[in-house]
Length: 243
Image (tube, rainbow, N blue to C red; front, side):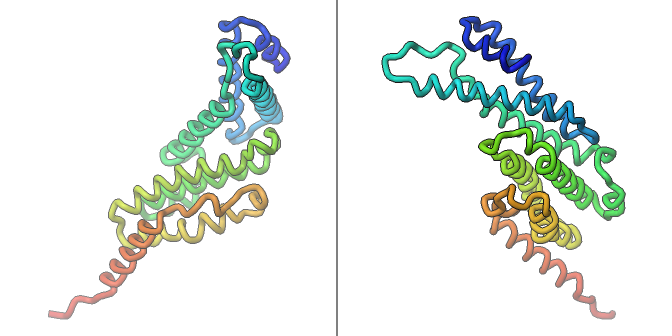
């Protein structure tokens, strides 16, 4: 489906044809976005994504033209507005959710040589999710960003979605009653690895707004985790008296 073909349909009173073409557009968009996160995305896949984004932009412009028409004008067609941007963002959110969920179970999809050496399942889970997040947002900055116009702010969009998923999982783990080693590992990710190794990566510089993301853990959860770690560490260091 070409942009010109979709524009022609948009100018015709043919709801069924429009709906089919619109569903095809969404399918192409989903396939293009998903394929760009494969181990070896091709220039062809990026071009398909770029074409889908151009079509979304065009449909959004048409929606705005109808929304901005003078009072008393003819009624908008039944297919307006498309709300393509909203649908696009929902698709990305589902894709990010899938990427992060798969990271915890599909070890072969990530370079896990360092992960395998971690001593607990919690550490391995956090590490896999963190690695997946880093690899994907860097791919957005390096390759996918150029497929979108600036007003999509696609780097911030992706980073925000990944941040939300990672934050939700780490919050769940922080509240689960971790031992001292797992507490320490989680604190390292929250206070060091994530903000310094990922968000401050040179390829993301100038493309994301770190302040708008906030922290991975709320102040309350972070304080509780730090106190839990210090208490367990203190208890571990206390030696039992000799009998």
